[in-house]
Amino acid sequence: MYLPKFIARFLCKEYIITFETLQDTITNESRANVYSHNTAIFRANKLKVLSIDNKIDLNDSIKKIYSYEDNITYTVGTTVVSLKYDPRINYIYTDGLTYFTTKKPAFDYKTNLYKNKLVSGTYCEWFGGGELKYKKKY
Image (cartoon, rainbow, N blue to C red; front, top):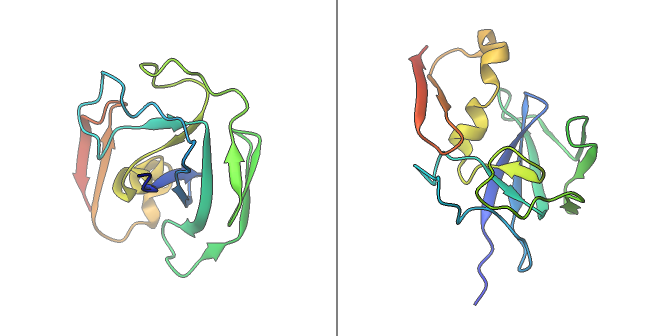
């Protein structure tokens, strides 16, 4: 029985996209080099967009955003497809829609580029396999 999985992606430094996997979504979550599944970065060939939310202003949700990095427009309610998904599952940083399985690493990803907006909390960075690289309290 297929159970959809809800996952998060960083985008444009200030937004997090929440996705749902589809029954035919292909990912690299079963790769060998995962230290922590909750903080590792993964790739998928297609995902359904559920929401696009601002990392800092939780009242700021948008319906559509364009990513220059991916050359893809993400629109709530639609399915996005990576036309160049790399099927080699043990490769972390290659073609595909990148995402995390939890929101914490998605929130922290690239947040250091504008961390002066953070009022309080803990900022973390992880290696691609999910091992903690850096942690700082604000």
